[in-house]
Image (cartoon, rainbow, N blue to C red; front, side, top):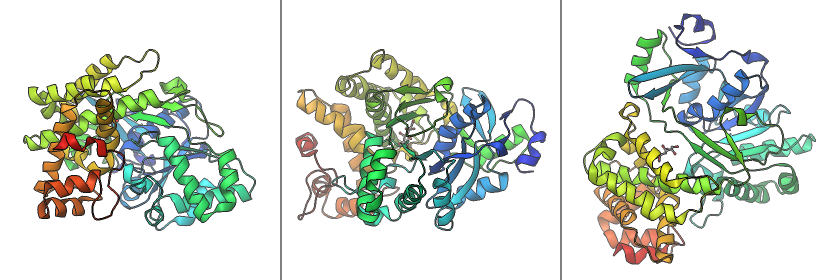
Length: 450
Ligand code: CS2
């Protein structure tokens, strides 16, 4: 029997569930990229806000590429369980915040209408680094943008403006440096090119706060769903598994209403940068290091890699000696304690967080995770051996050529296996054959790689 609104009463009492009237809640949030991360993080915060009496924060989820999540959640009325795992413990809660999942390629008008509805105040995003369609120089790649959220959002904003409605808050929840400012700039570029009449309205009435989002959400498999079914007695095709820890820091600059997230542990601050930089360079930086070095050493999971003394030391060095001095902490932000807490989180075997999940999309992740730190080290005359070791492991990962999951993967593997390592490095750092480099602005790091 499948989890759904009319089978909820079959759940055993230890499974927590939402306690509000879902259908009395207006769709206040439209979310692009309704994958597991959103369901473990922002949807969980919306669920708790509504459970505590906030109104109007049901979510309309949008998938841009794959109809899979719609097929998992719509037959369940949008319901799914979120299971927090730690050691041997597992606590599950049914989340009621997501009302529907729209598949954009087939439901263009519905997506535009949801955003253009007066009840919508927030449009949020977890579309991954590549979903923002940035060209190598950081500007908007218009051809790629057409395949992403930009046309839908641009059309919806034009409709809101024409109807005299309030602006909306665009909330990027992806691991990009200055994610809000980047989204603001890219969306403005789209509007300039495709809907110039909206430009002034967008600038005056919409905001794009930056956010730091953190929760480890391993990809789940059939075995996880089977175990859950055995425990709760219902089949949940949309189940998500995560850790207990969760953090969300948001620049408090909303265009209109927002849930009272502050009551649920969300930090609403004037400047997100210290949290975001620490998270990208320490957590995500160590993750990518463990991924490439760990896979090479024959490990499959983060907890295995971090149990290896050599890799643990390397990750610690990256966090403490290389990344930490490059970060100006916010008052009260203790980066040494942060590093300790990260190692504890990584070590939890209950998460079964796969290294190959982290290793994907390296070209999109490496600049903000490693290269910004390395530039800081070079400028201040410090060594960055851990990052150099990470880059070398990434290069070998490309050279070896199998299981490279990256939007530039084919080009990189062909270069590495054809012209060799020097050509691969040139392509990334200083361009070749008149082409712009893949990672502009980091040429100064080249001597480190020789
Ligand atoms: C990971 C992140 O897959 C990856 O690249 O580093 O998804 C990481 O687990 C999250 O950012 C944690 O908040």
